[in-house]
Length: 533
Image (cartoon, rainbow, N blue to C red; front, side, top):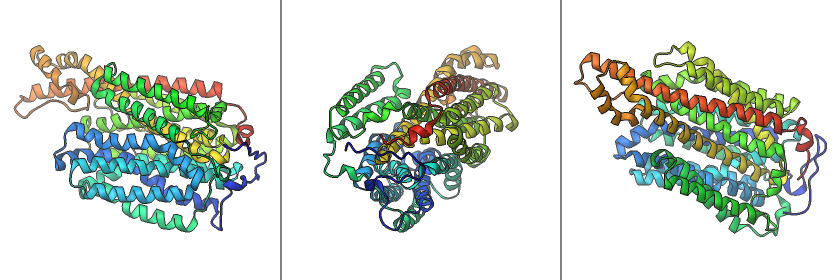
């Protein structure tokens, strides 16, 4: 990078010349509205697909492994290219790559619906993930460039609100579309959103980039090393559930990814113009914000995954009914994101990050009291606590990462934040589901016997532990009514044992995150935010 350093020491300080918005389209709030369309599309798609997967499997005769790749191909492509997408935007124009990302994501979504084969769905999901990686980091990069420091925190709060709400609304929208239209409509819905996003963005978005990077060599070896390292780690994580977390394949993939990322870090300290400047991590708030972002989505996506299994498979709600019952989570995040931004502006992330993690810990620990027949009165309080915590952490950690990075590195910082978010979400879903599966496997026979299933039959039903780990009781129509009721009771109790283990681990991690944030983040983030490098 250039040795020039930005020092926005006062709230009204302008960005350096290369980062200054070009042309008449430089209204910060219109910029925020424009990027919200693209962000909403990606967030919605990330969670809406889980509802469509069963229908995709039935319609395209896909195996469970195929359906895993519908999710994993998107996740792998997204994680591998996020920092690259931010760097390209910083270097060649954030508006340009945001628009390319929106257009590509929209077209890939339509192609998924038209593909007609599971192989086509998987391939176009990967393409969709790549274009999402061009889109997401440049949303934050543009906000960092057009908003003055005193208003950036509130902008990030609204950005976080859009992200949280779109993710939480996915199951509701997906349920409605799958039940009343078809699974293809889950992807076609991105067409009108994408068209509106493109037209509005073309009109209002300013062009911003790091002008100091003109003439620099692009760090191709860094791109390759980072992509390979992230691919290996995410691949190991998503396969850990099926291969086993102690298997050679899982440990080998994760270890190989870590080695490659270490090589990437060493390489980045040796080149003049790095893809991801290691100097960013000298700022404790930025580093801790990255870790807390990953932990935030570890908890959010992991908990949402098994909550939807609980509501649908244990309690018997339809996808729409289950989605409606999680609305308190969405509404709480709507309130928490701007509230968290306002509190962060006033007191710094040292207050809001630990507070958000503490609220999530409370939500997890309250879920320890859930049973197979808990009333809704026992469900909505932890939903609200989780939504408040997630929204608060989203705004404060985003502010800590992007707000503490120099303006010229806004896209890279956005890519770093988005990468942490995606890896955290992948870990949360895989690790917590694996914990549930393990606990179900160790308690299923005992719970079936306690419920009244004869010991030989209970031992035989142990082979159905994978279905029970998804909340499904292994019953058939030819079972006597009394025995069927006992199998359902024992299976659901075994599933709840797994849920209790998962929420206990998640809650403890939230407590650790709260302590780390409280101990490691500066009391006065404004001084850090207004530093240039």
